[in-house]
Image (cartoon, rainbow, N blue to C red; front, side):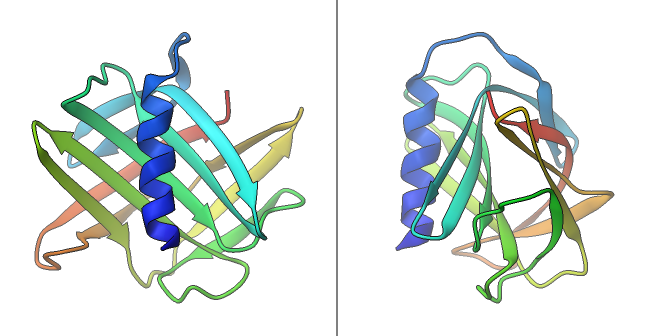
Length: 152
């Protein structure tokens, strides 16, 4: 259910106007994306940092979501995993092409996301790359690298 909420948040942020958040960028299988918007929403003890790529339309969209299973209250590092344990995070990449929606999610890893809280904004990044798997076809995977994602 929370995963569905991530998707709703991601695509609702696509319709927001504003300038590109050029400091927020990521790469999926070597294709680079720059965020048009980055939103941070914390509810019920969990939080999402959602980035929607520039160039979004009603039938084409790319996005990235960091879901923190415990809302960060200070700058810290948390493990990216699929355990759904408190004080961990997972990462989702989504793609809409025409009427085809594909979602990739992180699994168990040794990678930690660095969360920074400064000037009333949240940012997240991790070193290296992370493999994400298609949520409906585990054998389909993508390689994610992240520059830094910073809330608008």
